Amino acid sequence: MIPDANESSHRPVLVAEVVALLVTNPDGAYLDLTAGAGGHMKALASKLGTAARLYGLDRDPQAVDRTRRNLGDCRQVRDIVHAAYGDLKTVVGQFEDKKFDGILLDLGLSSDQLADAERGFSFSLEGPLDMRFDPESGGPTAAELLNSLSKKDLTAIFRDFGEEKQAARIAAAIVRERQQKMFTASADLTTIVSQLAPPNYRNKALARCFQALRIAVNDELAQLSKLLPIALDFLNTGGRMAVIAYHSLEDRIVKRFFQQAAKGCTCPPRFPVCVCGRVPQMQIITRKPVRPAAEEIASNPRSRSARLRVAERLPV
Ligand SMILES: C[S@@+](CC[C@H](N)C(=O)[O-])C[C@H]1O[C@@H](n2cnc3c(N)ncnc32)[C@H](O)[C@@H]1O
Image 1 (cartoon, rainbow, N blue to C red):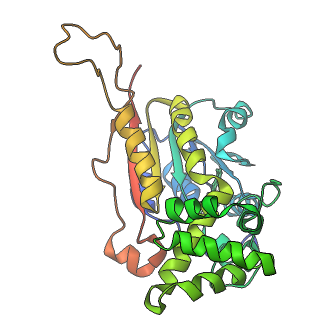
Image 2 (image 1 turned 90 degrees about the vertical axis):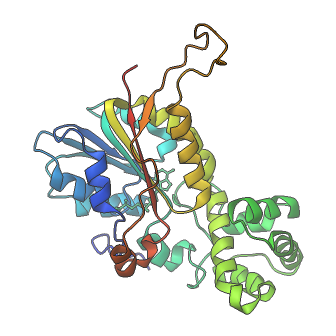
């Protein structure tokens, strides 16, 4: 069932921290690249001045609809568009602002997506094995990947994107199973993984395999790696980028990007003058990632793995 666009079960994570660390200019322009249900955008709007401009995008058309309704009364909102952040350059071309004082990325999926059985993201709900953030994209569904990829490629997905130790066994079982019956429903994958995982590790294995497949379907890690340097170009000097990651694979990408962007001259110390010409482009604001407080984790258990990193654009 498609949930009512007004009724969001998603609770934004680290809201106070995001607002405090992202807003440096209360009358500036802000861009949320993963609008979701608009929770962070709403919190930002409540802290921004009346001259501020707020933009959002999401790859999921239902999320866009939900965010538009949720933010209907926020006067700073200029545009909320259906797009993947991989298309940032084209999307910003349509906006009144071309540079931003803050850019937010809240990665992964929302509680609304997880709770909608028709999307196939959850191993505890029965539905089609789809998992595309944008079901209108025409890209392959999770079922199509399971039915077509080689054992080697499936192993790589479960190993590299799920850090699943039984990756090869699970991939082999999928390839065997699909010779009898093609994968169509989330229960088809749940059954295979449950048969192979020891009972006390079953839920963890299911979570890892579903996460891995979702990352593959949406090409999440490659999209993130490509986006970060592009997003940096859209920041005003003094503007900030804030990224919330939910697993170590994406957090590592963000951490390394910020570290690289914060690096100055890389010439060997014996060189009398710099020949590389490299200057730092960003200053890291959060030396360590910001984690949710115990109270937030208690009231919103899905926040427990969140890690927020923030960096600021330096003058060039
Ligand atoms: C954790 S939710 C964001 C929740 C949001 N911060 C809120 O407060 O409601 C992540 C969102 O990112 C979207 N998303 C994932 N990959 C995307 C991409 N490449 N481009 C745009 N949106 C994407 C998902 O559709 C999902 O709605």
